[in-house]
Length: 151
Image (cartoon, one colour):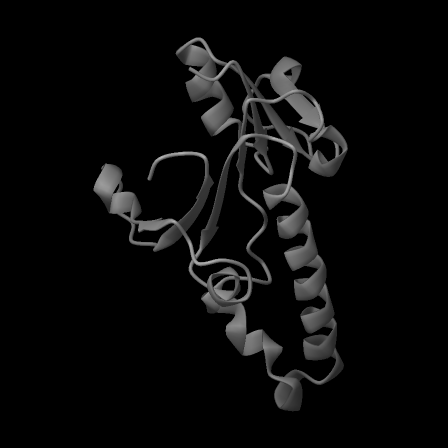
């Protein structure tokens, strides 16, 4: 069992709370205040400042704003001109952020994001899951990139 878990880009604390319920020392980390009701388990800061904290597992949900296939239409330079060019730059910055997370000095890593840009410009995902497989009604192909974790 993992001893210390950092859940990045998670202000809701959904995963953190679930892990705490089964006895795992988990902390959420986000640049905004937590909404899960446990600020004592929340690190309000840039997660990149906390990757060297002796964590056994990193679970991270980097923002999908520039990665999701849903937003591809906003990269049309002919139609959106400078806004689209700026969006391309922001996507490259977001990709660099993901690479830093993936290369963190943490043995086990789970990175989650919807199907999109990361599939073709980062790594092929370890697996793709659907929320309805776990009892939700929604359909959203969600990719998991797993390092030293079983699918």
